[in-house]
Length: 439
Image 1 (cartoon, rainbow, N blue to C red):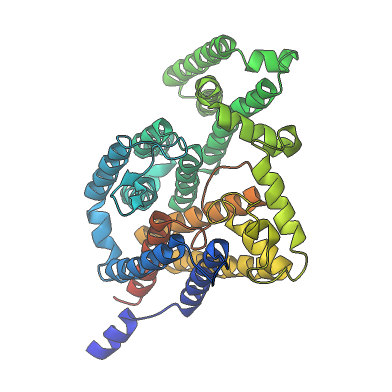
Image 2: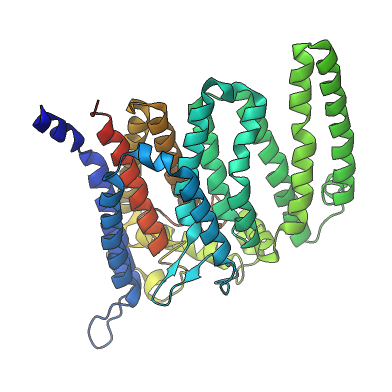
């Protein structure tokens, strides 16, 4: 009996192991390629060795993660969450790197607390949503859930790191869906996001190209007008809530709940109109048309497309990419590592990479679906959403289909905090799968 239980506890998902190791190896090979020089013999830069060291540390953290039941991590959620917030706050005390104060300098390497905070937030959301149960369908509890996001997002906004902040929303949406939140409530938040983020992006584009002459853009760019509209819409929503309170007519409550999203979205839009930095506005412009600034903000996207396109069907060959070797491709180890890979391995290599991610995400979804309890399903779904968002945004960014946000490609991009956090996340997936067989 004991040996059978031990065998069950050691249940291994070989598909995830294969996909993870293959992705890490691809990342190491690509980082080696981007840093190797051949003058006087092949020399490799420090980043390759550092990435390998972080991989070893990540493997140790993986085994540490699976050694304790995920239920214990949920019990420690408050402490993990508080510790993550402290680390995020400490990062603000260090000098900015590329305009963002997101790293803690430990001398021999930097750590990015926001990466770990994603995991801690997933665990905290899982605990809260599991406690709510079916009560998540109450709109008050639905919105209360987002207060868990407010502290980390507030600090991340100060850094500022807009791309990382978006990951938290993707995680939360996925976990709310798995928890059983009403589709109407989730759609209302998509409307909130469309107004709150869509309007500032629209305004930023026209501001950057210097054309605010249209009546619509002149309204959306005027924060005072947006606030006035939000006050009017908010008053209508408040009146509807009062009518419902005395009449208890359900359609009135639904109307009020739908209307209240609009003023909230406009207030967020007015705030972001002022918050977006000049470099972020330029990224929006070059996303629409990189040729608007071919030697500035649009340079990265243009060179990335050239690198991927020049790879053709089978690529130029390992370490033979000209965009890479001649340093035309910026951030070739981090943000645009996919472009480096596409140039060297072409369509075939890029498709293989995407298939590996598909296998990884598929197994993550299956782990969430077959988890023995709601806690396991919630944690697994949050992790899958985190990975899926990173993959979609990074590849979309490299191919010019998404704005440049600086999100790394999981397991492949250079970065210790990202790689170690990803391996901890894989450990949690394993943890949930292993405990499914223990009764």
